[in-house]
Image 1 (cartoon, one colour):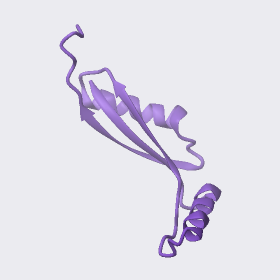
Image 2 (cartoon, one colour):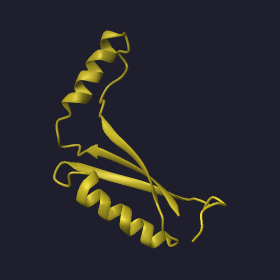
Image 3 (cartoon, helix red, strand yellow):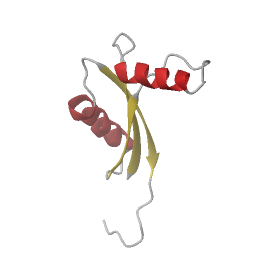
Image 4 (cartoon, helix red, strand yellow):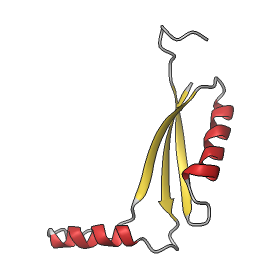
Length: 90
């Protein structure tokens, strides 16, 4: 079993109005040194397979098919092995 930590962000060529709004808000609060704010999504999920290669395949497909918009967004992920709880069989 693996825990996937996925980051989805708009491609750098895509305008990020939410990031601009946050940047403006930060400037209004006095954080003038902050710039180039981009907003993304952080997703965590568990994948119940034993093979890291299979977990990578599943996470990549999930990102490509549902979790990101391949036209506008990029994604990256990491996988961490999880130990099965003692009460879980299989």
